[in-house]
Image (cartoon, rainbow, N blue to C red; front, side):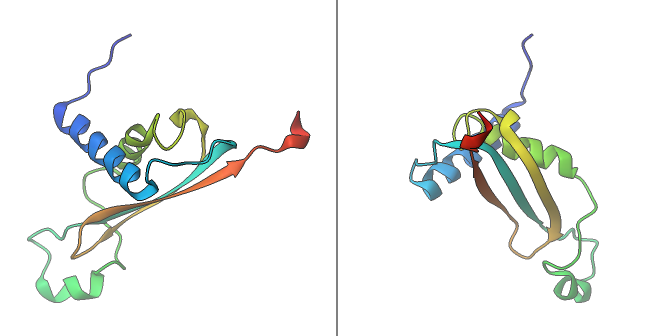
Length: 120
């Protein structure tokens, strides 16, 4: 079954892949069983949030507007697929937050969990 991925989503996935390759210098562990994923999505302030609140909310207040957190996680997993890990089906743990920030960005922390050799 063929699925359609919008051009904007494809572009974002390529940017994620590129950022990972730059940060990791194209290297990642080979002897892992699964990956724990931690995502921090720092979202921009909307214009209807009073300027006085922005300083109080900066990287402390959770962002509860669109885009949905699950869609952002999927974007990261798809962008890292076949680059940071073999397939996103080996992601065994996910922790994620959306926060307001003056510096919108996405931070991803990967923890490679090694194979347990006694489990053979």
